[in-house]
Length: 201
Image (cartoon, rainbow, N blue to C red):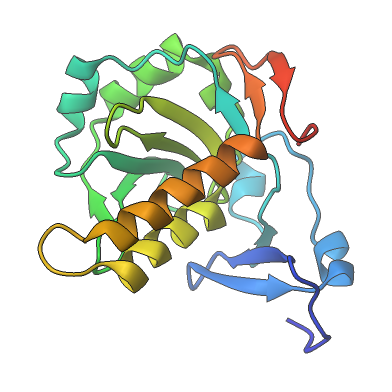
């Protein structure tokens, strides 16, 4: 943003017009800070940049059964969903070795998920996502900063080999979700904390 030296780690801003993430130093992060609660529809389209939040919630007892998952119709066992304020809809993506792939999402299905899991109404448009991990025996659901989702995509792009990905990529994906568990607060589908791991966020 301003060419100042960056700390590691550092925060990101989403360029709403270009749909690109930009690294931000601490003063720029403070400048663009917004409340965690979702802005109104009018606020959702205002301004060019939005600070990506840093909260990470592991959603305990999230209501997403196998039949509903199958309705998403995606070919992999991971997905992320966020509200696209400019388009006025919830977008569904899944990670692939070629990058994030968008898949159609029926609005009625998303409404059902929101009704079953009211915490989803607290997603900040554009910059927070519902992240689903169903790889192996996992059935995990998070609210995460959207840059975490693109970091996961980057792991697949970097480490994928052959048709099935190879052990290196799945080790990297396993490490990603282990780190995420360690740094997340555990929250109910209604949005109430149950237990804290690694501090509140």
